[in-house]
Image (cartoon, rainbow, N blue to C red):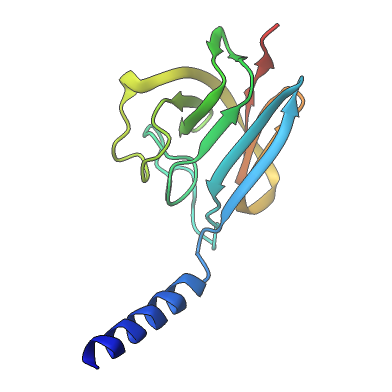
Length: 167
């Protein structure tokens, strides 16, 4: 009988835990870049009045570019990022934020938690991009797939990663 009650209370506890609202909810964005299907999966943290870039997210350090599990980006066909050809597949999407310049990173590791196990020797592509200050405060991290690439928007910052289909 004790085992029965332990199982019941354990299942109730799991059910309640599973129904809790996540602080950084899971998001999925899909779009097309010149005929290439792009899927980005991430957890979207909120500003909540905090200083984000240079504060919560330090400058000059590898960031998982979201919260919780690694953010991933997936292509169904080969693409070009800068001068690098990226094969179809699913990649960990990391960034190194800077005050004016960011580094976008696609890495073979796509199933880690955070950037704790990030290894530069697993990078597939790196691309430098200028960040833009915006007047709009985007409360939750947002990715947008556009015709020429992917844009990250959060707080009062926007950073664009140019991506092109391989011709």
